[in-house]
Amino acid sequence: MPLPLPTRCHLNIGVITETFPPEVNGVALTVGRLVDEMCRRGHHVQLVRPRRSREAAIVAPEDANEAPLTTALVPGFPVPWYRELRSGFPSASRLRSVWRRERPDLDVAPLEILSRVSRLARRLDLARGSAFAEHGLEGWEFDVLSALRRHVIHGITPWPH
Image (cartoon, rainbow, N blue to C red; front, side, top):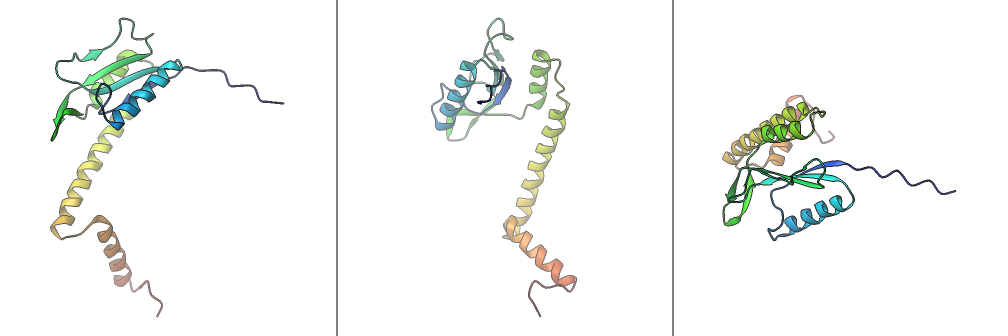
């Protein structure tokens, strides 16, 4: 006996992207198709992307809660050598305010913690990479050298005696 099909549920989905149609590139077209299909299937999609020149901060229909697609625009800057492409500034506070306004029932506190941890990880990775570059090392080379040094200092070698 076949199993009954699951009841169709409509989701609220957030999509954060650097590029979206009418920009023409592989990522923009793929994200555009993905968002179109999610809306076609009845889901509410909130798109967050960098603002193009002269765009308002929020682009949304009159009744944004019922529309299949709302767009929140964040500040951005032109990518070097690709002036038509803009990259967004980190804007966790902007996302929190938009999501609190649209969905006050959601707890967005984890976003605050995760965005800070993510920024810290990027900064540490840059600092680590700079320190390694001064000595002509890659991260993986440092890891191997550290493991070998630990073995030698503690009298343990990776080779049999």
